[in-house]
Length: 287
Ligand code: ARG
Image 1 (tube, rainbow, N blue to C red):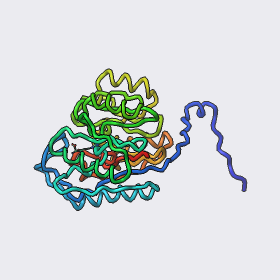
Image 2: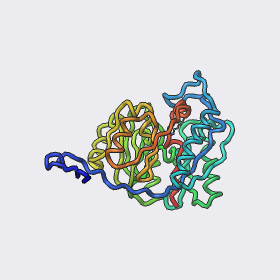
Image 3: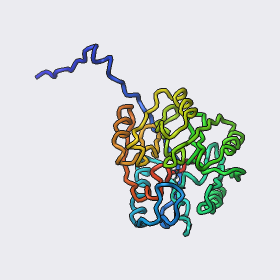
Image 4: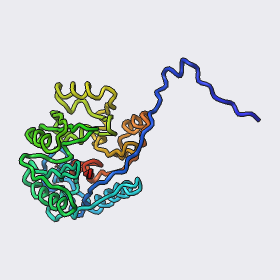
């Protein structure tokens, strides 16, 4: 019996988008187990201290994310959680690390301020060149490296003078983006970095000038739906091929597949009560 070889007519070929070949690069990340996670103050619209939280469930969900990273071959480091710092699980805010230089965080709200020194101590103890920040900034929550450029968010947390500070420290181009929707208060809730060239973002999270910058620089970006963004679907972590996302972000999952990425869903519903998702729990360490 001979096999039938499917043929594609030229008309069909013209509309087929060839999925690009994506390559995974091993990542090194820092995480913090949510042993003391709860919501007892409100510093973003997601948080409601009146709603119950389940710390054991938060730990179990976080463990699933940890296991995915280990399964992807990542080098996962842990910083000890500190009692009384319930938001410390959102490690992305603990600093920004490129070229072995760890720029420390200086938090906006007093509730989180002790996290800055806690993370800087970890960086110092682990061989990073620590830079104590002169300006308010919330680390990788607002600074995202795309290729050689740092996208830097401001509007709710990190001050724009921290953008100038990191430009001086790293000698890289820093592009300021203004966030306008309080639900997307950190840049990593409104932009997902997929690899050195590609991002996904939520247009309505930015002012018109910033939106124009994003359109000019990333004409092929994935624009996510408001529905996916509303469960912090953009708050994801990519190794260039595998993209760990909120399992409920089904449109984003499809968009990623169409572009040749491998989305991996995880449920962090408990940590969403604090206003964070996959990326918030992940700080990339670049030696
Ligand atoms: N409750 C934390 C805060 O409001 C959540 C931080 C989320 N982190 C992030 N990288 N977006 O500061």
